[in-house]
Length: 276
Image (cartoon, rainbow, N blue to C red; front, side, top):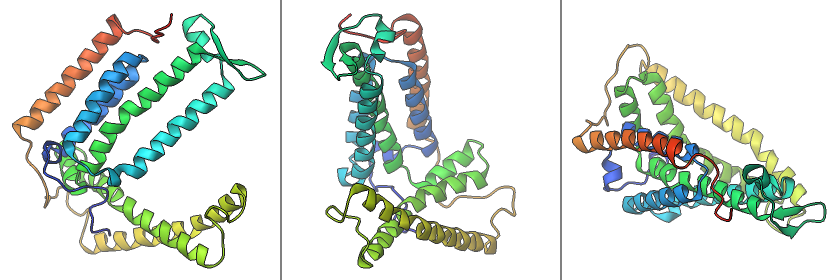
């Protein structure tokens, strides 16, 4: 198993010291509040707050780069598909139609552009808190925190193993790709068309699955030899005690959720179109 504790980036910030279960509550609350709204103003405020918290955690960007760019690319591709497939979808939300860009078969209107921008901000609003949770939460401490909240320790430990194995799978995938390239299979730019490179890339799937199954079998045998699961309860080497600051954050999460529900019912009920 990886000795780097998965994606965890060691640090001593306030968020690194926060109880893992409280960070999960913060992530879930932030996600629920984000999906309550379809308002660019709300997302701008939440995104600023999320980025501020992520900066306070002082997680190196190089650690987060892969996930950051993956979500950014997904957001861009999703926006392009919406604009090309439903170029006038915004009209169904606002009741108005302001054509801007002609596509030949239809026209992209201003309402759809605002809708796509709002949807992109919704996804981006979740990014800082997700990165904060992933990179400041030690898998073992998180599993211990879940167990304290009443989650069965077998399930909590399964979550811990999942976090730990992500870097191992990434490293194994890169090793398999290097081996395929040494055997003459083109994967990089200039090694054929995009379709050919994609077909060559799929040949890494079977070895990766086999390697993963071998890892699972090895870990399972090791856990069986140590008597894992024979007792109804277990102790945790890296267990933490919930502090007053953790309880305060949990209370603030409840206030955030209640405030979000109130704002949704009273002020920001639907899609906000600034040009209407």
